[in-house]
Image 1 (cartoon, one colour):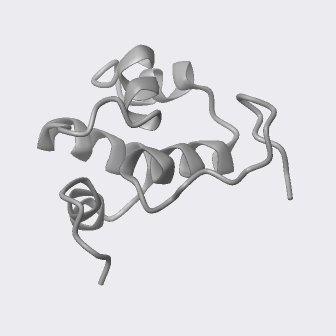
Image 2: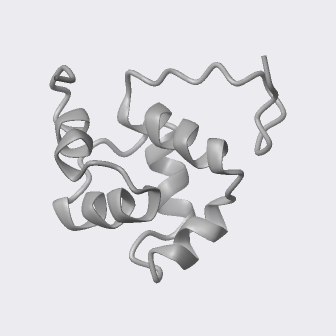
Amino acid sequence: MADCPTCGRPLEHDETTLGGYLRARREERGWSLRQVAKITNDAISCPYLSQIEMGRIEDVSARKLMALAHAYALDPGDLMRRAAGEPRA
């Protein structure tokens, strides 16, 4: 198993949570939190994304989810379902 470039731990983040899923996608791309902020034109700040990834923020606005979906080239509907805690289709 590969190590997380951010924290150095094995990549075993819980992808069933919104934060874990987003962190896994970010790390797959080798991006830092700062790079995501830049890609989203600061619609998502480094601290805010970090809090989402750690599960400390769960109520993420649709606007921020859309910015993240666009940055990661993800399906916005899937990301919104994950944010709502709905099972994936």
